[in-house]
Image 1: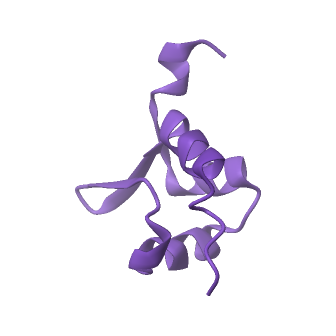
Image 2 (image 1 turned 180 degrees about the vertical axis):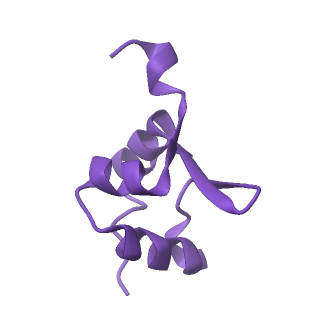
Amino acid sequence: MNKLENDNYISLDEAAKYLGIKPVTLRSWIRNPKNEVPAHKIGRFWKFKRSEIDAWVNSGKSAIDE
């Protein structure tokens, strides 16, 4: 995957699939401010960049104790 494709916005369903979780789980993570999920609200939809998701996971911020 080239860098340009990696920076395109993807939907909440695509982001959940990319992370290997269910969309409902990702929605709950977005609602919890402790998680700092790199999500962008565009209109009424949540959008994500794969590069930001990768950086978030690699930073360890995705491993928040509930």
